[in-house]
Image 1 (cartoon, rainbow, N blue to C red):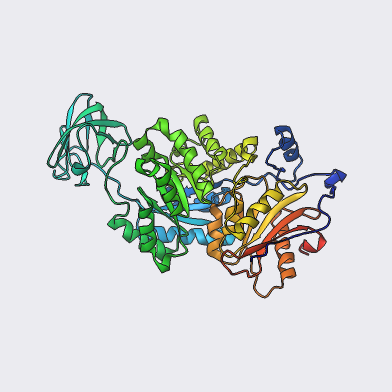
Image 2 (cartoon, rainbow, N blue to C red):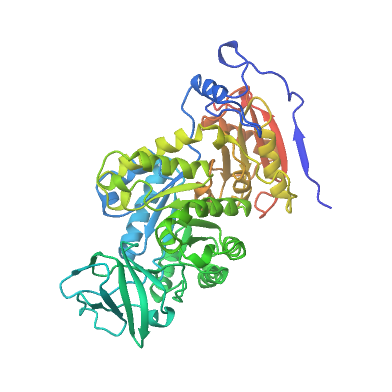
Length: 537
């Protein structure tokens, strides 16, 4: 029989005066949030008298590249709010990725930040070959042949080769092919051996090496290519925290990646990039992929091409909902601030796109070419930071009905969700502090929306960086070795106060386990009032 101990100080319920003699439910930048949330007036009023701005809860993923390589840019990006850096293995060499990650680690250590690294495998991107004159113009009604046996440089206005020889086996008459992210559309008339005879439905310029998608999915290319398997080894060698697998069709693709990582890569979290129509075709397949991963990415580029943009809106919300229900982190990606590649300001549509993802409860929003190759990488991160903060002020971003009618399967899960429920209902609460060896308890706690910060206190640097992806979690280093239980509590409170999210007179919820290094060992919840001894001298 397991014993769950919930220790509470006897002063719970006492009205605590705030600064200037006013009683307050919350301070230090975090409005009280309950399952029946306060009105906008209450939220705005509580924010208006705070000593510092609210802390952004939605995390920012930024892709590294030539733009971030410019002198001083990477440090400015991290200072502006980057929580996770993305290393895109579709571009750059192993040495490029190693150098960039080394610089990230050095800057993060110097700034006292936990910044996670996400390696992103290219996957089976199917592309046409090259044209003898680099590009052609196709007109509606034209006949056009994709010949998988054609020489790679021999394309012209009537035909082109393809780097995926199995394409002719995967399509039949009546299928629709989308080239260059849907800018050119071809309908298949017939397949004759290596030749796919099509009719142009939507014409336009078609240049070398553009991608091919089949509307509705159904291409048999494996999720992990030979290049991916080599890049996977590089990812382990340089020490990424997460590894994204592109184009998984089923859970088996993710399980294969886990097998390839083996014991050496056991601490790397797998991210499933949901890009194929088959992956989201039904809940069983989607849930299987989610369960086989540590996080998922709503990769809206190829996914939108395969299922249609009109279906992408609901699919994004569905993926986020399913991921959260399975206690998995979720990243929303693709063209979130695309115009800022060349503009210092986002469009209103981009602002609303980012805000919509925040209100959907995504853990993170991602920047791609904006920070890898754009003219304004720092300004883009700053803009995304502002938009996330603005969206998080909205009432809907404070509501949470996560699992309040479901049973719990684990003790640490019970403690985490109980802590969040208590935090959202007890006046004077400033933060939730979770002592953790793996980051699992803060992850579970972060599934409930709240205006309160979740402080993940971990000695393991891998766990510290992994938590950088979780919505609302602030990851801090914390060495528990040689401490008594009471000393642990005091040192944890000191760490929280020193970070500026709680002060004397506040309540802080503290969760920990009897054995701090045991996986899944969190079994204690304690509500502590911060007093003078928790303030570092």
